[in-house]
Amino acid sequence: MKYNTIRPDHEIILGQIEAGASVLDLGCGKGDLLQLLIKEKMVRAQGIEKAEEDIYSCVEKGLAVFHGDIDTGLSEYGDNNFDYVVLNQSFQQVTKPDLVLQEALRVGKKVIVGFPNFVYLPARLQFFFLGRTPLTPSLPYRWYDTPNLHFLSILDFTEYCSKRKIKVLRSYFIRKKKRINLFPNLLAETGLFVLTK
Image 1 (tube, rainbow, N blue to C red):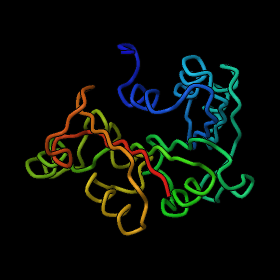
Image 2: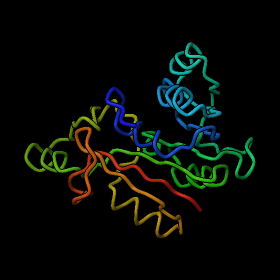
Image 3: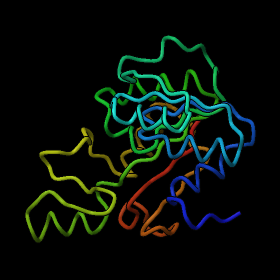
Image 4: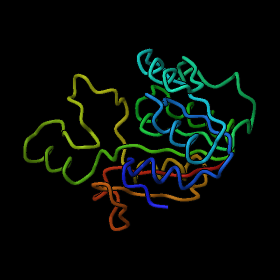
């Protein structure tokens, strides 16, 4: 089924998760993805979010979202407690990405990670020609107000997974709301990976 009104990363995630699965969304924001998964796949979903205003948005939508800092780990959850743990557009914002991903892999049978590709061609060109921190659709923040703490590329992430012996089951690359396969480290705005231990 094709969804034209939702974000392309949400559409891909929706296609990865089976109906009725259990899902934990780390850094769930305003809960748009959780709401979509509950509506379309009838998942059993929980979220963890740090920003209070986003938690209020989630509660208004009737979502089960807990206030928490995922950088401190997920000690309240047991091993393989969820079918899926999602870190979409939040992985690059945590202070301890290695700990957060290892914890996500511990509590989830599969982990879905999505992040902006910081070496996307327009970003590279802005660095080169303007000599400034780039602004792109996937990187819409100025250097002084960005929530992003880690600036990684698709190649950085795949090498990290290889070194940590994390298995990449599937990978998807997005540019301007379309999936691409050619030179993703250069041409993709966003990388999305389905992982397991």
